[in-house]
Length: 324
Ligand SMILES: *Cc1c(COP(=O)(O)O)cnc(C)c1O
Image (cartoon, rainbow, N blue to C red; front, top):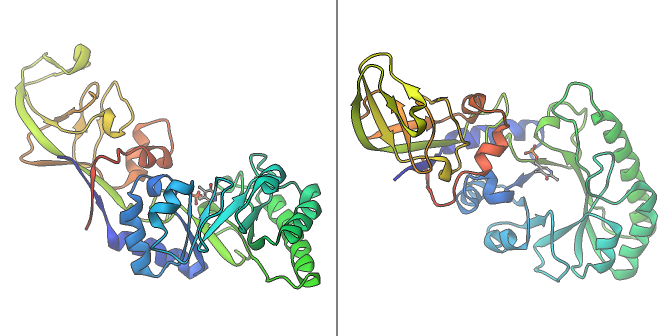
């Protein structure tokens, strides 16, 4: 059976590196911790000393409730929830329907996807006061932090203005000071001040430069055979041999989350040949027991027209995760 290994020392290396910029980390573990396994990653985060995480929905919050001091749900329901759960507020409309008292106000500073608009802020704050909602956090998200230039500083400046306004409001009404967070992975090293918390996903998992790969995928050998000169293998015989060669079939296919490929693929220590099958791929050479498909997503992604996030997050939850 194929296995996903989670490299604890690389994961902790990445967390150390993030902590050296800002030790207050809101660890993003949405979507099964970017495919790494939400429980596996939660155990490691707890061991490391992380107290706050972000998840996608109420179901994920339920799974990790016991691990952390605060769980922020990015796209929550309206129903009440436990004390250690906070709901992100993505619109004024959602705020009005919300019945859970602990919230983070999301502000649309330019992404134009979710968040309270700047002109709605006064109304939103008054509404929170009226309903006795505890505003634990205020945040925003960058659209272009992975670009050089881009809108990052325009959004950042807008957010600082929002911060002043919220702080004044809280002071006037004797409310607790919420914490402010805007930095995602790509913004980490770009901002002059990363504010109270950083909200980090992909850097933790080693999916951007400067951080170490955490997930490796290892396939088991299913069978070995010899391919004669000018013999094809796999669907449509998409690979044709130029010489006699040994080939090995492993138990990893596109059903496991590997993007489809038609014309081979570069793996860690060999190459996949021709077309990938649903449950298998054929690789060049003779392997005894195991074949490493990848151990650094930044290298593996170069085979495909996509991003590291996209491959990691789709790794089948069926594959066993083992911490090593
Ligand atoms: C996914 C997500 C993040 C994490 O982004 P990375 O690029 O993985 O660091 C942060 N904030 C929000 C709102 C997100 O949806």
